[in-house]
Amino acid sequence: MIQILVCDDERGRSQRIAEILTGALAGNSEVEVRALEPRDFADAIASLEQRQKAARSNPANCSTEKIDPDSTIEDDTEHPFDSADILFLDYDLLQLTDEGAYAGGSGSGERVAYLSRCYSRCGIIVAYNQFFYGRTFDLTLRGHLRSFADLNLSSDAMANPGLWSDGFEGFRPWSWPLLLNACERLQRCVANLVSQPDRPILDLLGLASGPAFGLLTRELLDFLSVNVAPESADVNEFVHYSGNGLRFKDRLWEPRAAFRIAGARISKWLERGVLPGQNILVDAPHLIDRYPSLVTGDASEASWNKSCLLDGTADLGIDSKAIEPSQFPMPDWLSRKTWVWPLLARSDSIREVSDPWGESEVPLAFCEDASRFHRRDMVREFVAEVKSEFARRYVRGFSDVRYEPITGFLV
Image 1 (tube, rainbow, N blue to C red):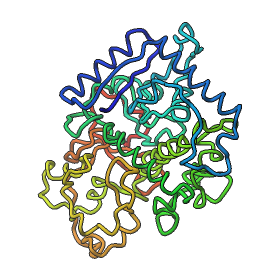
Image 2: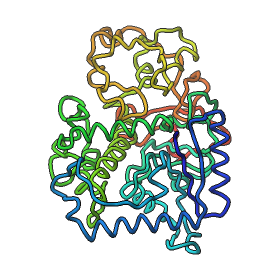
Image 3: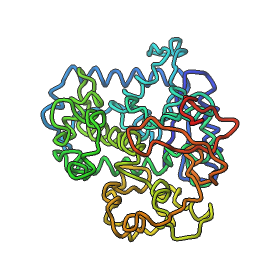
């Protein structure tokens, strides 16, 4: 049973959002959605702070020199976040100043996301109304890597079926994962790290050398480590010293927390830092936009849109065998199948590579706001704020969606 927990500072709103999510997941008996009332939410945050304080007062429990995933510390406390596979958190918690033991405030939701990731056993964290209000699409395509939420969206997005399955129509940002799949993937990422606790993270991901490593920008590498060479950074280095795991004075409240922190944060780094450029790793729709010969069907939208399916078992409608040697070797770390672009770009098994002067007309354009291909006369072009030669992208352009910043559009 997948447990979804909704936390909000406004009385009644957490319950309304829970009802919206229940409606969106109607018919799925494997999911249970519940809401915390503001007072219970405030008390839950205060309990996380107690774990934080206890860890600081006895840092010998979890050394910053080496993390043993098999060691344990005594903590028999029960916390409502520990059993949450998906945790929905409001950003502005101003009204919690009147509730329980926690003094909330405007913007304190990000602090709660940090506490939840570092001092609870929760799964995926979704923060709402921090960067987006209403139906908004971010033309920069830059993920909010500093946020400890795994996904940032607006409360209006809760009813969108595209959060849960490939069966949707209309507005649905391509950067969204399928949340139920994300829960399982995070567990496997954590297991990857636990099984090799001292292995450098980039080495584990297959990105520590070769042409892909050469394309990682300084900004991306700095996320992993500021004290040692990024290709040498392991879980301990990342969690304690990168500035993107525990804060400087904080300590682990239990050893396995390190692997949950690293699993979630590194997965987001790949998803919202590395992937948007589509020049290090490339996903299926952006791949066939460049190499249409890989499409196994005809030139119809239906045929091309198979590549946009996020269900890992789906047939993407592309010649996977021809590009199998270039597939990213750690698929659990991303919400979609990807390939290493520098390897693809020199693969003679692809017609456009072996015959670069041949005709290769692309009849459709992939729309980042719809997660679908549409005819080119129906789309609008923009320039994303990514350091990549593939920064020019497309949106379908929905009349009821706000596109920001508006200067991203090409006239």
